[in-house]
Image 1: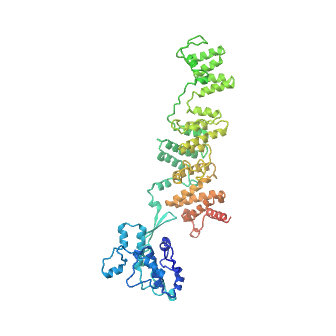
Image 2 (image 1 turned 60 degrees about the horizontal axis):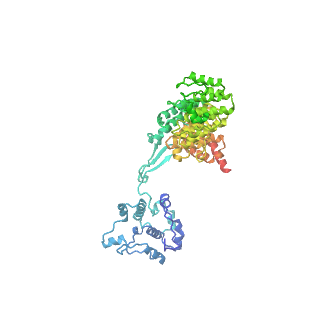
Image 3 (image 1 turned 135 degrees about the vertical axis):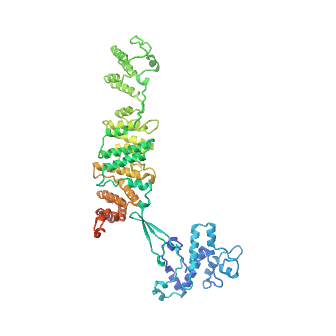
Length: 608
């Protein structure tokens, strides 16, 4: 405090938790013991009382009163007198606020500052501090603050003076905490010292939260899936229920999400294995409205004709080669007959142009294949120019030509159309260059992800066997199935996407029993903590066992933080194991083997 430099009085900082929340009721001013000795036998109770009044003046000078005729500062030095006199504010009328002197003189007393706080709507911190000070002044008994001596140190607790520091709570209050076994613990506000029973209530969180959407979502999932008593039909049923309840098929995103669930059903039915034709059938079964891809006439410059030559060869004009006027409408037989006549006269180039202009692509392609390669490429380019840009045939021909299809770079756009037929063509028709096919599928997934179609992009990534990554590595293409890890963590790690990823891991385990997704184990721990929070500790402990098994199969030192967190959660939940009910009472304190091994690995890592 400004202007106060006495080295004898060094008061502790006014910390909320240090003075009130976590201190015992017996206030022991140990730090001031030497100060009492330096003052040569000054009464301990008197000095303590002075310090309390002095301390409160420094914070709230208006709340501290001095009885008339008593000057507590007369025995101290001049610096203290200056400080105390400065700590007494003067009102506008020039009178010092002293309630007791006001009462003695019969003058009307000012309303208490505590009442002013309540009526003026002061902040809770100021009101609370004033409550502490008022309680301290009310409960202070000057009779108990006698001279302290060594004989009082051996007296029983009943003779200990009343605490000077007021209690944080003036009345008993409800204490609440969460138990590790999925329970809510309530301590009722009773006074055991006055003969009331100290009641402690235990409530099940599962019962309290039984109507919440989150608990219903957790209870509907048949996890953990790596259980011996689990049948894959239960997993397939859960996926089908998700399709029926959580997928809006009227939107593109709803259809993409439904496609992911159907893929999981297919994987589960076929024990984690599938071929491209199976996936292509899955992709095309939802395409009820097959898009009509309009064909167009080949461009004149591709055939090698100018616009005037193109118009001169339209039906109804004189044919300079045969000397005949072709009919306005020609039948297929007449078109083939003219193609043959042109070859009679050795006009191969004109025969190719005639066949291309009249959609005789079979004749044109066969004839050009027996000619030079440049002519064959020219006819082939003319044929592909008649296909619509978004035609899946265009995608296939471009892939067979050794190029990344245009559909892989433009899909996901509303003007381009549905992306599923193009992926079906890529999956069902593997080209000789498998690397090209892989790059085309990954490129399509990247394009869809860039347009916000996360579920569709992850479907492509699964077809290309892209591994799962981590949330913090934005360069990874996926971390949880059907959720973008480029968003915030809370919307990213939803319960539904964790369940969907676990089903994919389970489908792979049907084919490879020792398979597990290492980056996914941290989300299993998150899911286990949610189960514990909603009153399902037995399932949470089973997830901890699965994570520990996966970590022990690897080197737990490679993921030390995850191993430690799993161990801590398992130690809190280990008494929720249903197997304890079948054990003898003397064996119920034993821990499972996987927990003992995990703890040993964590300790070994800490030593290293």
